[in-house]
Length: 539
Image (tube, rainbow, N blue to C red; front, side, top):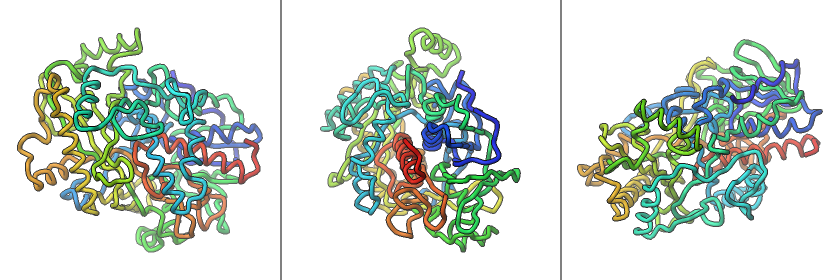
């Protein structure tokens, strides 16, 4: 059973109030509370991670159905034929780290070097690498790029299948090399992803960071605790107000770690954001800041689904009797389908041959049930997802109303820049080519999606618009930078209001070229160090 994370009864006041118990918030709460003299409160709107699906690697498949999420959708997407895209955002302690596919990637080193070139001092790759290493307890590597002994379990997959090795050989036919460590010296190539797991169980930020801290008298964690607004007095954040009217004081700082959707949403509910928009929805402006909720970036995903020639994937284990077999195998051996995140094989390559680093990411899905739009296949299927990693399109997060229980207006504005669509379709075609190579022919019976009827450029554009989905990597909506136009400065302090800091994926000036969970944990680690330094707290 997971530890009881309701650690202490609430106090009247705290030094630090952290809003959002996700990948960064859990890290910050654990690190700041290492000093017993510092009083820390962590607030999470969602519930506790008691359900076993949160801890079993294959439980990820259930998360796509809505377990532990807000149940949001985007606004109609103009460049996707007016579709509303399902947008799964975590609503549980641990945040995205409790419901994701556990893929441990960091982005490319040049992503962070670009942040530094944009004026974000202290955020180059060499600056952030120690924080990645500090977080890790890596079961495979210990070198310049990886560490051991950290809170976060990082493991090699325990349940690969022969079709994974065939996929590597198929990619090699197209000149894409095998890479044994895509978070090491080079990102290029295909291989097994490392996973945020320990002993074939999910290692979420809640389990990794809050679990060991559960006995600290100076740390309080409250779940089911939705915040109404940040209280600002004389240009300083002094407290937060809950939806039930409760007020909680923060004598040093309020830290927002509610993610790239939740953080700008809460800021705008607090009157911090574009003043004209706030006035339109009935929120009294406290600080006119047009950058809040702007600069929204996300990775859009396309996929190839093929029917397989036999039981080469995990599709059959969706049937009740096979599920029972899989459960027994996991209990006895910690292997098999239950130990699999289903997407633990993939890689990075190029849609634009002139790109400065890989701009396409692949995820080989060991089944077909995660995606929609394909009929049942007798032997099951295999999925190869592709996502363009450096979108030029920018969207927004806005308020639907002043009611904190009303869902935000999420507009990624996918493919507003035609270049993004072109690169996405190139990535899809490359995924098709991989699946057609000779090493996969013993495993693949036929391509079912996009299928042979998709041939022309117009066909591909139509298929992509109908089937594209989010990779769940929203970022950038409270971006950091060196000037007042940025929402936060490079120390993550909100420009224009004292005592208020942001630490989550929303601070990324540009989204990293990979999954975003490990970078968000890194942001939490670095933020904790900056807070301690700024507040005179010993590390």
